[in-house]
Amino acid sequence: MRMVNAIAPVPLAPVRARTKVWRAAKSAAPLFGAAALGYAGYKLSADFREVVDSVRLQINRYPRASAYGSSALTFGAIPDFLAQRYEGGKLNWRRLIGLTALGSLVGGAYCRGLYDAQEQLFPGSGLSATVKKVLFDQGTATPLYLLLYLMSVNLINKKPVFDGLREKYVGILPKGWLYWGLMALPLLYNAPQDLKVFVAQAFSLLWFTIQSKIANSSGSSEPAKPCP
Image (cartoon, rainbow, N blue to C red; front, side):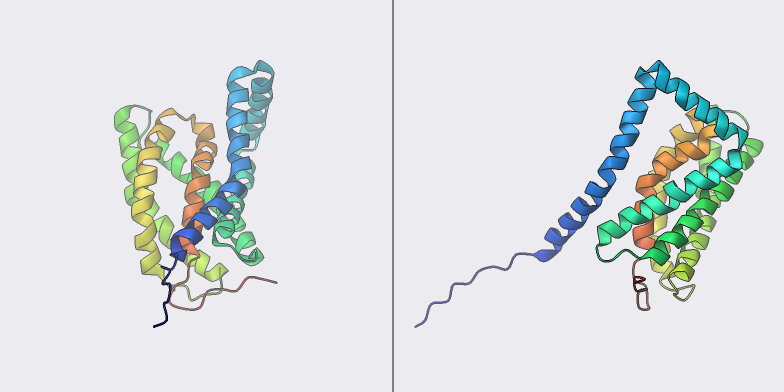
């Protein structure tokens, strides 16, 4: 009788998941490292704080342009780059450029308009006003925004506008409530009005990476191929 050594196959899914997380983490590490150094420098160095405050004055001179430009990076380009690094494969330039433009609109138009409207509807920074702002954001504005965002992503990827919409919507919205429901309270309570969009951008780097990955996942039709 011939003996056969049975070797249990190694599950590949956990290995691949760890590889994807490690690849995305390596890409994200310099960004978060730079953010941590910047925060420490602002707290510890008077000279660095003076430079940052002068930049803030320039931002306040051109608030719209500053919000659109920085949002293109923090709501679009950087998160989608990290999401594509997580997924692996060739960089999809059409998707990256499209989501950069979409991110600019999200931060420059939607977020700034939302925060200005909230301040008109619920003035002040007390606990009651803050809770009302969070509930308004998560209960009214976010569900509509997410629907329009997912439809826009499908158009960018040359997919039918409703492709996989229900699955992605249900997959993202509860995670958004959990993430932003916890983050929005200190954001709206502590951030100065002129810096709310920019504080939101700091929180959004991680969230938009997750959102971009889910939004660009395959729906009912074939996924868009990377641009050559």
